[in-house]
Amino acid sequence: VEYVTLSLDEVRQLASAIANSATVTRLVLVSCGLGAQEVVVISDMLRSNTVITELMLDFNRQIGPAGAQALAEMLKINKTLKQLGLYE
Image (tube, rainbow, N blue to C red; front, side, top):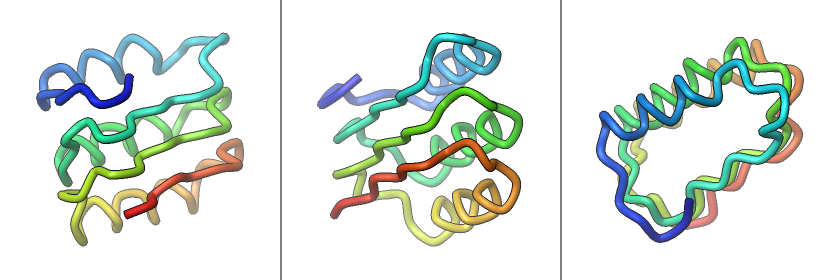
């Protein structure tokens, strides 16, 4: 999903749908208007996901310190994710 504004509920639905997917290896949410709450939901899902290797969150300018902290905590646990995009 790129360049589409996602609500918190939509991010929750997306995270729930792909949490246990064996086929989704890339999650691209570029310029989706994500803020800290949405990133916390994604980070929580990725704590236990062992398939997604790439997470692209570029151009989501509202992630803020709380979203960054959630990503940092997730990265301490998730050993599968190899690429994290946070450009701008």
